Image (cartoon, rainbow, N blue to C red; front, side, top):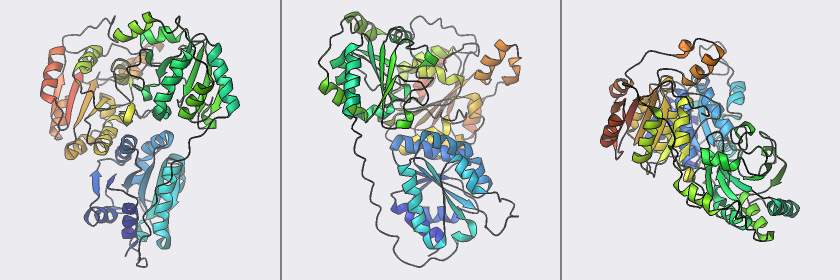
Length: 538
């Protein structure tokens, strides 16, 4: 048995059945072995950065440790942005990277991969011939337990070395789920006192509190608090009469109005930061208490008055147990519940379309009525993302909302959508992307066509880098620097094998949805939107 075969055996022993990547000299025989001997599905991307993003999207929607592979030198170098995104998102991901022979520093593809991997992924595991199986295990353990991406480094000359025959080893034992972190009783009592004394409390849940939704809802009812979520936990309290919806820069007008009066905000499993607090404008007079399992996260990105170290569910239940029921008819009023029940995100918007471009808000209003409710929603990075995030109700429960904004990198929407579709084929994927973003990774339209998954790519095209146009003009700088000629991106998509429609008005949007839905395969809606409609909170 050769080293690459031992690596393949070990990877499969860790439960891997799907690998994303690009073939090259240093990984092609490993991929061939995974596919032909083990039946692993290989999703071949057109760019290494996109391949790792696809693996990241797969991990985020499945909860599994994802695997990608790239070749030596430029293969790893190109994947740097995607590895950084995964590191900041703490995505469990193993990237099997080839490397040039250690004894050949003049190799045309040589560069020092270890410091690069540490600067991007954050964790580097070198493979040795005698310990290849153990090294694979170390990489998977690190990816799952840290969690985060790991570069498993395999020099090209090592891959063909022989290893002693023998079993790969026992099947890996899934790590036990850690016991929920129980909060200190003194912290529980202090939080209960704050809730008892507050006049206008709000419980704000993030993605880390998804499993605690029922306990937080019960605490809100007991304490007379209102409920809200971060964008990453949208829909967690759907159906509750006092659910304010998303709190943050993308809060809707009614939510903003109510949160402005809060005097206590308790966050549970939420990445409290400048966006969640909208730079201090959202709940300016509130005492903020953060409940989190990570002590380093409490107050790290936004100042808090106090912190409670504990699991969200355990903490909510513990506080409920010591808190006598509190009624707050002035805060939880029938008028407020009635307003929330009929709140319309499109009310009051002065929507205007031109002869050849649709108002993005008009298009999102059509999306709200036509898109399947059971879907995975992916929103890329850029000015265009403000519209679906603000106006479209996209549930984030059950890993159905993916917003890979951690590094602020454009070009993420399409590859993350492909990975999400591969990971959760039971749900169609709707991905929102901008023209500038798509053009950084146009080749992945070919990947989408080959994968054939039900992905609707909604391309909101303003023929510009919209964020830069919005920022340049007020400073007196010519925004033409960030504008580009119009291109027929629907024709490009069709040339690469993806059915596509161009939308410029309401009627065209409705007609396109008539043809696209129900979604059974890949499709692109090239939506030419008005470039002068600005979303300040994107």
